[in-house]
Length: 302
Ligand code: GDP
Image 1: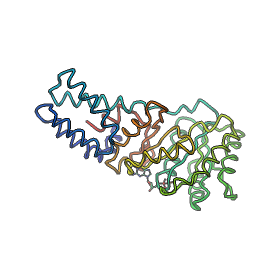
Image 2: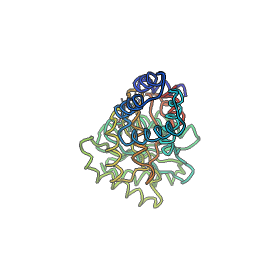
Image 3: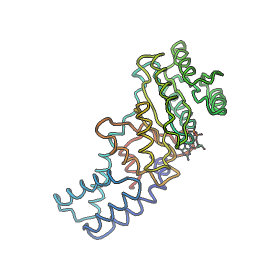
């Protein structure tokens, strides 16, 4: 929780500081609520989630005759926690063996870094891990993974063929033969401007299903926390192509834009909620943390 607090310091300084100023006023009035609305919209919480939160707040203020700003602060924390709670659904690695995780994201989002951190997390839980070097477009990506795998005792399946689908197919079969628990399948990153070029990763997904009809068991999209509201468009585009089931949001330590998590929660509830599995709050292995809604809100406010 301490690490999380430290990691979220920029978002806290930005949103938290201004919230504190609002909530240290003498009484709750329309002006305070309007300023709160503006603050939330401009801090990447976005219009839909803000409208929802303010509806809840105004209703509670009316019904409970709330006059004390400190009380309103608690109500906001409660409403925000409730809004983002559906995102909190940890992965159940025991559901399948091997548990196949396909990983996608635009270049620079933090895909490779996150794969390394995830592999170590899973190892720490007693799981054997195999990496599939499916990013065959970036010449350095394969070497990077192989070096990393050798150093951390994680098997890496790579190929010279240059066909990511073939690499991933191999990896799933190798994992089965070696009795591996978790497969992390990397895919080629895309430029944010090339979101339409997704046939390749859609093919990777189909080929995983050929190697294991129950898989992939998780389609994980890595998002850069710095991109704010653009995250919504990325989720939409990747979801349309490959059916995203979970998110990793990286680099929340380097940004004041963590409010976008509320926007994502609003966009996806309740039709087919996408889980926010992990958040990245620093460069260290322990800085990739399972997302916990109440802890996240506490770290923002306290
Ligand atoms: P990829 O192109 O998606 O594979 O991106 P990389 O994994 O190479 O990451 C791009 C950069 O972001 C690297 O310098 C990482 O160290 C950095 N990075 C990734 N995750 C985090 C994070 O949670 N916090 C911070 N501060 N940096 C991160």
